[in-house]
Length: 404
Image (cartoon, rainbow, N blue to C red; front, side):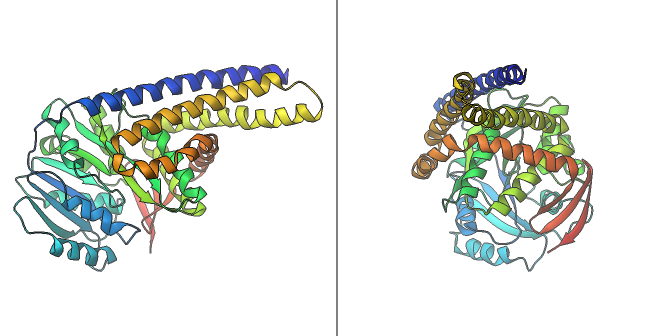
């Protein structure tokens, strides 16, 4: 009976793997079709909001790219909670070093400490209230992203269609130190990126690379909706979905995040993402929990079953074949996904190819990591983000526990 149960659930996992592979094929097809389209000539005035807190590896390089966008007229609004934040000295230097032109301007806003919401959300609420009145589009970017030179124009272009609610990219981690934890985070994150695509009703906004018309932002009262929240992007996504305004995914705005992390930082990051998901989108958290549990029971339990049967001199051909098929489906999806990424991030093709093998080998272990993250999220709503510890009471209530 246990073998029949294993065979049944293994076939279920294989079926889910086939569906996932089909999703990967659709992702690649979408990336290629979008890349083949000419860029729409739509360049309204833009305010780019960059919340800053603390120093991080590669910060200067990341922020420098914001000044070098191939866009005719935009402002960059750097916003921090305190005047003494160490990132501000670097930002002032970058502003002073840039050529003074009418094309791009930059300034710093001090938002003060948050009290009843996440610090990033508080910063953004203050910043949007003080931006250039002439700006027709709001763009949000994270300081750990390193956008390519056509990022801003590519992100804003879809908004030429007034039926589009927002346009978004996503992050793609590129490890810089070759450590196992860094590569595992990159593979973990890749599965989320490839969930985006042609189905605009299922797409989501990522706060590190999102554009929205100012009129839409104000019509949906996003600044008010952000009050009491920690997640700017989940809140924005929910508001757009509720208003039945589609979100356009822009493959050209998959931005590289060149970074490294320790195993502790990996767990802190991934646990935080799933805790936020559980609070703001429980309908997404539950499938992650069930799907990763099923996969781990079949794949890792099946590996143990094969070893046990081999030790007892029983046949292992069928269970081994099933495990091979499961593993092969994941490898194929990772392979075609990486091909697509190289085509849209040619400047980082060398780094992407160097990490290719990790995407092929580590993907089963990310399912185990997702399971751990989902279980942790089931038992705790406390997160630490940029040196601030929060308790997520609900989707509209966050309590600050401590600050570093």
